[in-house]
Image 1 (cartoon, rainbow, N blue to C red):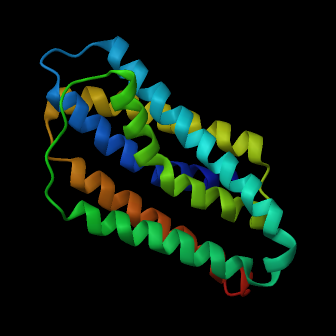
Image 2: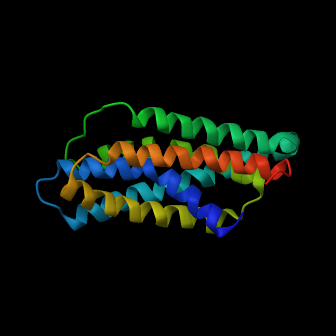
Length: 185
């Protein structure tokens, strides 16, 4: 997988965390860099951990499904992306300004579940997992920190657009993987 493709996937995966970070920033009366860095660490850490777990699960079953791995990647990325697009159209309230362990842990897990499925596809695509998860974690960390700042400055008007963009990116990557395997792209 090329660095550009990995970057595009990392950006797509980080959009949930970015949207939540914007909401967290919106809920803060005064922006605190400590909280922005904390959010980045939680979101980036879990966004790196989940694909690693998915990769380990995927390697256990690789020999059984290598003939259909491209279809699995296409379906998983498509489902995740379509779900993100659907969620971008829903109106939901932003959460409170709490940065306690329980709140941040739940948010980090919730925003990184899709990365678990991407990790499974990485196993089938034989991606070098350590650099990939580190890259995804760093990209998500950056988006988390920036999301807090943007939310604090601009408010919630861009949350749904960020989630929509992330969903579209993941769907496009799923289609690209399928077309590459079929020799069309």
